[in-house]
Amino acid sequence: MTRAHDLFTAPSDFAPRSAWQRECSGCGACCAAPDIAALSKPLGVPCQHLGAGCLCQIYLDRPPVCRNYAPDWVCGEVSALPTLAARVARFLAVYGLGKGE
Ligand code: SF4
Ligand code: SF4
Image 1 (cartoon, rainbow, N blue to C red):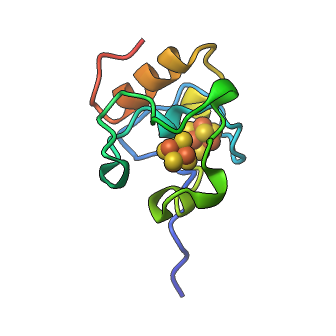
Image 2 (tube, rainbow, N blue to C red):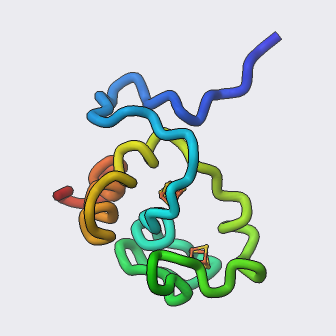
C-alpha cells in the first residue's frame, strides 16, 4: 500500500529554514506570488481580488484553482514574514523564480 505524498515534506534538495506550518494563516503569499492563468494574474503581482488584510474579496465565488489550493510546506517558509512583499519574495525564491528577500 502506498501512502499519499505528504504536502508538508520539502523536496530532498531543499533545506527548510522554518518550522512546518500545517494550517493556512491567511498570509496572502499564494494569492500574490504565483502566476494564475485563470485570473490572468502575472507572477509576483497580488491578485486583483486580494483585499485588505490579505482577504479574498470574492471568496465564495473564487475559481476552482483557488478552491483546490491546499497549504503545503512552503507556508511555513513564507507566512511568518512581516510583509506581503517579503512573503512574495520568499515564495518566489523557494521556487527559484525570484531573488528572495
Ligand atoms: S501561502 Fe499558505 S499560509 Fe499563506 S495564504 Fe497561502 S495557503 Fe495560506
Ligand atoms: S481569487 Fe481570491 S483566493 Fe484566488 S488568488 Fe485571488 S484573492 Fe486569492
